[in-house]
Image (cartoon, rainbow, N blue to C red; front, side, top):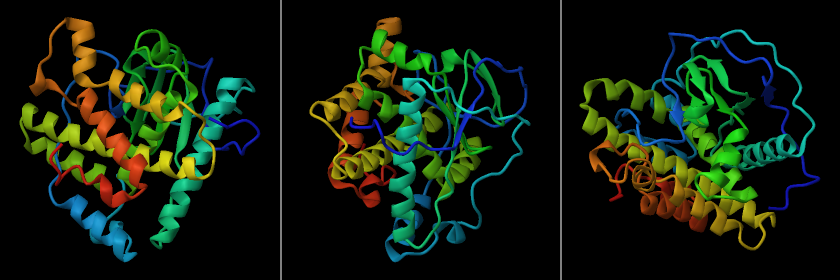
Length: 295
């Protein structure tokens, strides 16, 4: 990926070296899976149809949905400027590229894109969704509209998941930004409301659709990034390989030797690869309707 020398986002909150305190309260974050044990989330029904139709008509879908993302005050923090190392610069550049793409997409639909903050942490962190450790993997917290990542995850992605390369790392960031987009347009608030009425199995099945849509949104970003001439040979394959390596079936086979399909909450390797590719090939949000498609 041709990222050096490009704009870096200022929406970085570097909390490394400060750790975090355990917080028993908060909402639920949307995570990249890193183990075979994952809980389920909840469902959604007609909301995506509203979102897609509204977007096509240039109408702010938040108005049709009766509100925006859930807002819960985040724990008070004191931001620090990000460290000036290559990985931090890369993350800030990728975040800036997502800002450019999503600002343009939202502007075309007549809406504003509220840019998220990306929090860098080491070991553990406190968010409005509660306490999380690095073992949980990167996650998005809808309650404070922030992305959280311990950069050691990129080493684990290469070493443990055999998914190396800068565009594999960019895919991880773009996936979490995809969850932010879902939060902004109202998908996640409705999703979290309806999950309380569902069984664990039903919630897991709908969680898969939410995750696959975030993969597709990441692909949409990748499409526009490619059009800007920023991708190099092999970059797309890096992202597709990463999507494959963090599929539920791949992780469960690696960690426990067998799969339990009803426990899947993020999607199989094939599903994740397919939906990222769909977004990448089309560059269109209406191609990402995972809720009405056969996944």
